Length: 623
Ligand SMILES: Nc1ncnc2c1ncn2[C@@H]1O[C@H](COP(=O)(O)OP(=O)(O)OP(=O)(O)O)[C@@H](O)[C@H]1O
Image (cartoon, rainbow, N blue to C red; front, top):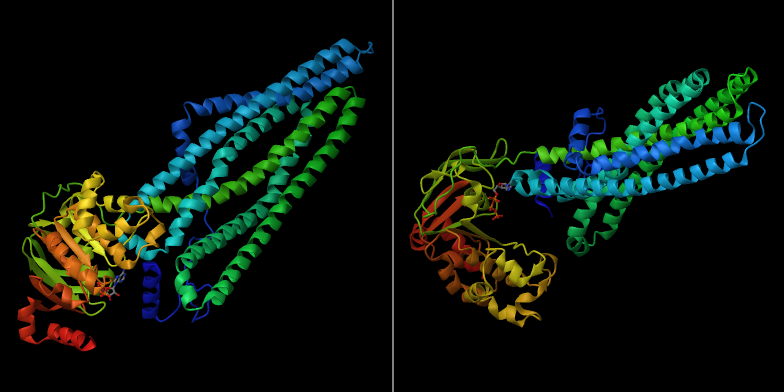
């Protein structure tokens, strides 16, 4: 499974205790570290940063949205006033005059026009806000993805792939609603609220004040409830992201699960997480439901005050019936935005949690990056020197303990040694996937930390045992080595590594679509493809990490010749457990627990009768 999973398992074995185990019991198979801190204060600067993503659209689209919003609000707020006019002037004139049907018709026509304007304004407003929302989400998602591409190996060592996935998908998606409707609704509600307050005070300030007074009381009561709601929703998000994280691992590891018949165990574990998520959702929504009725009760009290005081004012000739009807209509649409603002608050909290996690990734600096004064790596000749190189993946645990190695341009170096002796670590350092912890590593006399990373890596080719095949055609996969390669060049390299033969036999030849991760190809075929990919890239330094491990002896013999072509004229490193493949190396380096034990060519080391001799003997006996 993932390196992070292994790394976590390793560090627990050392510490001898489980960390953040899902059930808290020792011996549980799956171990998770929770992805987020539950209680965080409301962070305004983070919110500002989030909204800064809207900035590119503030010039063109936002003014249109605001125009539609103002138009919609003004028309909406005019209707109750016209109703009061209809009552007081057309239906039952206050001065005792006769009812005017003409005026009533005129007002009705006017109201109809207002409704049409309101409908048009809200249609266009929704259209424009959707455009803004989608663009913001697009920008955010691509920022995040671009950044993840640049992050260093040690970042991925620490995190399960699922948790990275959750941030690019779920967390970004959860911001979608905020940007498509939330922000604009917030503005509409605020404008509408202010408009209503002004109108109420203008119509009758005494009645207006009495109704508005209930608002602070309501906010005061609901504050405590809102804190609990906030915590509950954060809990829901955490539980959901745990499920997603596990799901990713469970699907990726399905073969191992089935091979070890662990399906039931997996289902039980998933069920527990699923249930946790359901319960936390129930809790959060129960609390949330309490919010609406609270507003309604306060609203009820407001209406009570309105009719009681309203009737009194009418009796004392300070208010007309029409204005009281208009007043009650305004008050009705007064609670609506307040209620929505409460929900908006929750939406904002969810967005805060998501954006916090997104920005945590975006702010993560790649630990391996160009120095400000980095120079481009000139064309590599291939003289590589390691002087007393020390390396630790984790503090205090040396994987390499002072390696000295002098490699001349064009040499083939074989790294051998027991599992965990540090072979892959040396290779990781050469490509600068990690930076050395001590000593010096130079290529052609240049410290690799002083050169531009891209110019270094583009001259190093790596073929791993676990070849990564991307979805696409066979041709696309070989072309990954050099994007501007012609079809002829692709076929030529495939022929050179003896991959052409099997590719020709595939149903679509070079245009055959390989399924995700190349599941339809055998391990050996995948490796041949990665050989072709490496040859196409024509790197100055070539690294083969257990690259021939899955190739049968017959194919191996076939590619030995191709390898000679592949290795010619470039410095190469071969990591191999199968010692027959490295017999012809210029130098064989035998590693043991992060140190060089022996060094020399095959004949020299055999004569020494040391560790290498022992390894050869052991393999010979095994055969
Ligand atoms: N990402 C990592 N995080 C922490 N420790 C690691 C990591 N990768 C390797 N190690 C540790 O570093 C040491 C050297 O590992 P390395 O992968 O270089 O061995 P290797 O000789 O290539 O082994 P193998 O033959 O099994 O591939 C081991 O003790 C291993 O546990």
